Length: 201
Length: 201
DNA sequence: ATATTGGTATGACAAATGTCATCCGCACGA
DNA sequence: TCGTGCGGATGACATTTGTCATACCAATAT
Image: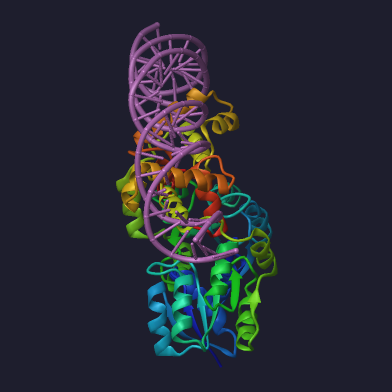
């Protein structure tokens, strides 16, 4: 039996995925969590062979959870299962010890197949997504540019961003200006959208 | 047997929900679609008792599909199953002949229960969401204000919005200004976020 | 018949935003 | 040790955005 931990915040989706996997004779759900910051503790208790992590979760993102989990239980294979196939996510995931990356758009049958393949030591990544990650190159933003853009994306004004990040307003404007240029956007709203869509946020 | 049509764009979630419901002895999935504009045709072919519709779908939103489906097959009970419990969505759904409204955060067991209840003629709505819809009141935006805000939400500049909607720039500014005030926002980014979050977009 | 409301438009003005040049200090690789 | 890049800052400037008053017309509500 392959022991699987399932981390997904939406209860109905979690339950449904659990039902789907339980239909397989060789797969067993040994833990279910709804928060990113509950993954490691649950994994230490349940000792799963495979952890299936959503990215969008409260507490900590699936990517953060993956890095931490990999550090604590290196034997546990990690598969990211997420809504958005942002190339930037794939990059971060691979750097966090993840061996599988599936998007929820893929057929349901691929899920069990992916679990078996990573258990056998293979890596499982959607080829189209891998291509996109390779062709799009690195995140061109510096850390601070990312920070500023992330706050701006929530509708904050320059003054609010400056206060949040403890910067002068002029500095915030500079970072935003650079980010807008690097991303080829017209204004920060568009810049934020582009960065988010690529998983650079 | 209760005949169910399942409309959800993410294949993996759709497959998982199908697996979950197929475990029930009295429920049978008779049709699965991935696009909003495929719902009515599939329903006419499969004659389901209950249609389970996601809101976020390509082609047409689940709410649009609900209205059309209700017009074509009034006997079919419609349940909206969606990620976001925006009160505005609930309002629109109820006006479109929907009898059930579930959020994906709810426990998986509620899904089959809801299907049985709507089949028995009951209405099923998350009480917390119903309260929110009642307390938040109507969408305060006029049609045009909504249009302008919707385009602005995608990062367009005033000039681009004006071009898209064939308006003068001054008019666009006026609408945005009014929308910002009505929503109690600081700028159009925040206004767009508020409107979207309430399902008013 | 007469307000009122929504859609559209102008013009003027203030505030926020985006751009640019320039500067400082610090860390890090060559 | 010297350059380079990043984090941080300032000041000036042009442009965009947000606000407000005002106006006209069409459709409703009273």
